[in-house]
Image (cartoon, rainbow, N blue to C red):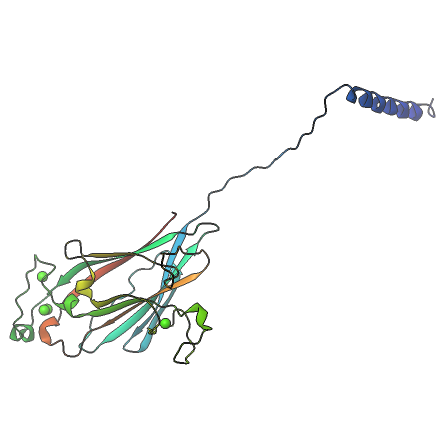
Length: 248
Ligand SMILES: [Ca+2]
Ligand SMILES: [Ca+2]
Ligand SMILES: [Ca+2]
Ligand SMILES: [Ca+2]
């Protein structure tokens, strides 16, 4: 009996195969493909902001792009002749989304703070504590905002023969300027804001979207002229810079 059992089993197996082939000839042709393991996950859209900053020609701060940037400029004792610059670094963290990135600058106050004797001698008025807009600093701070990007078609070398890099904190004559004037005149007099859709490639005629994984640089320089006089002593100016990335 021991030797017969494996043989039966083999026969049953062959019989089953034969039956399957036979019924197959009666059925319609069919073909099935299964797509299994389907999965959806939303992409992220995460804008990060950093900067590299100089004050009177000295490097004072570098901040890698972050979600919690805090103030770029915080200077509490500037004097006539002072100047500074921060090149703002923008980075989009995403897999697929090329967003439109906008910048809004809002001046929040331009205050007299206190009126010193020297200010009064310069015909300035006393501070009105109820008025956050009675100072003269924003009128006298000159700012330049520009795309701190060299011409990519220029093989890293500018017309002046000096090698240029994007985000080098230097305003090259070939770099497109966004604004050049007083901080006061930058913003709308009613809303105190300035708004612009930033251009990932300012050398084209259209506003290009930002590409994820690349760094973009906006230069922001300021200067308090040496001939400003005493009228700005102790005056304060505060402003916010808001960057927003939006899927279009
Ligand atoms: Ca005031
Ligand atoms: Ca530059
Ligand atoms: Ca003043
Ligand atoms: Ca003052």
